[in-house]
Length: 341
Length: 252
Image (cartoon, rainbow over all chains, first blue to last red; front, top):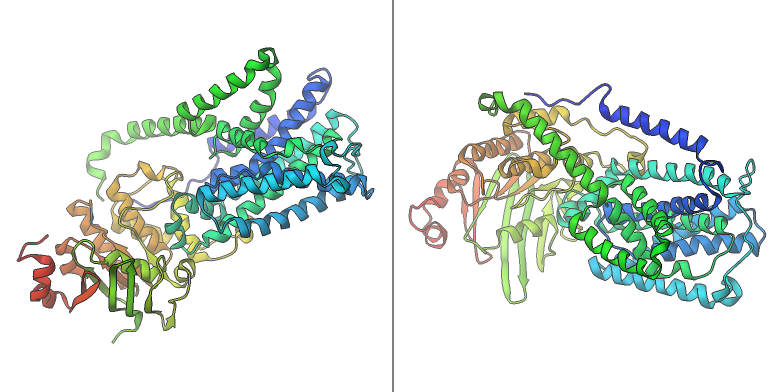
C-alpha cells in the first residue's frame, strides 16, 4: 500500500473557517459598551498583552523545552524603551514601539548567545538573574527610568489613521496584533525551525546528528520570545499610560509560565486560553480576597498533577484517543491479511 | 576498489581512566556494510559517537569524504552526510510521524529557517518514502503520534528517516535489538537498499546471524582495541574473536 497525502476539504479546514468568522464577529461586535464594560475591556486588553508575551514562552518552553524567567524583564525593556522614547524624546508612539522592539530583539539575541552557554536548569537560574538585573536597573536608574516612581503620562497609541482614545479602540488594535502573532507562531511550528526546536527539546543529541545547530536554534527561540515580550511590554506601557518597575519583576514571569502550562505548552491556542483565564479569573474571584492566593496555589498544584499538558493537552489527548478508536473499528475486520503486504 | 568514504585513523578516547578507544583504525567504502562487533562495553557506540562528533577524540583523525572532520561539530558532520540511528529510537515523542520524518528531510533540504517560514517547498520525499516503506513492510498514518507505533516499527522507521536525508554514510546502532525475525529481515533489506544506492554503512549489531549474513567486512573491538578485522568468514574463525566474544560456536 502506498502512502499518500490527504487532499481536499477536511474537517480541519471547516474549523479554520469557523474560527475566522468568529474572529470577525468578535472584532465587530465585542468592543462596545453594550457588550462589555469599560473595565472588562481593559482586562481583556491586558489578556491580549499577556497572551503575546506568553506566545514567546510557547516557543521557548512548548516548542523548545527551555524554562525561562526572562519574560517579565524583556517586557520591561519594551515598556521602558517605548515610554522613554515617547515621553523624554517626544517620539510618536508607533516608531517608539517599533524601535524598542527591534532594540529588544537585538539585546535578547546577544543575551541568548551568553545564556545558552548554560544548559537546562542552569539556564533557567541564569534567566532569573538576568531579569533581576533588569529590575534593579529599572528601579534604580532614576534619571532614565524614574526609579520606583516609574514613568507616567505616556501618550496613547497613535497609528496615524487611528488614535486609541479608549479601551475599545485598544481592543480592536490589540486583537489584530494578537491574531498576527498567533498566526506567526502557529506557522512556526510547521517550519524546519519548529521541528528543529522540538527535536532539540526531545533529544538534543539526536537533533544534532540531524544537522541541527542546537545552540543557535535555542538562541533564535530566545530572540523570538524576547521580541514578543518586548512587543507585549510596549503595548502594556501605551495601554496603561503609566509604568513602574513592579510588573517587570522576575516573579511575574512565573505567572506567565503558569499561563502557558495551564493552556497547554504544546498548543498555541492553549497559550491564549491560559493567559485569558489567568487574567480574567482573578478579577472574577475578588470576593475571595486574601484567600485568593491559597486557591491559586492549590489550583496550580492540581493542574500539574491532573493535566501536566494543560487544557489543550487534554483536548488533544482525547482527540487522539477517539481517532485511534475510530481507526481500530475501521481496520479491525481486514487486519489479519493486510498487515504484511 | 570503491571510494573510501570514511576513515578512522589512530583514534584514541578515554573517559577518566577508562579507555574506550585505543588506536582504532577503520575504513568504510561506498556501497559497503562495515560490521562493528564486540562484547558489551567494548567501545562500539563510543566509536559511533566519535565519528558523528558527539564526543571529541583525544587524538587521531576522522576523515570523511576526503576531508578531515575531526574538529567539526556534530551538526556540520551530519550536513556533510553522516547519518545515524540510535540503540533505542530517538524521536520527538510529542510530535506526529510526519514531523518526525521531516526532521530527516530538513537535513536533506538544508535551507534556512526564514525560507522555510515563508513556505519554501523542500524536496518531495514521498517517492523515496514509498520505496523505503515498501521494504519496511508497514504503513502509517501521518497524523499519528510517533509513540503509537510498535517498538519494532519505530526502529525501522528510524532507519527510514536517516535514509530520507540521503547521507553518504549511515551509522546504525543495533537495529535488530528488540525486533522479531521478520522485522530483522526488513532491517537488513533496508541496509541493503542503502548500500545499493551507494551509501556506506557502519553496523553495530549483536545478532550474529545478521552481521555474518550482510556485512562485507567486520571490525571486532574489545576494550577499545581492534582485535580483528576481515571478511565474515575470517572473523568467525579467528581464535581471538571466538575467545573474546563469540564464545565457541554459540550464535549469540
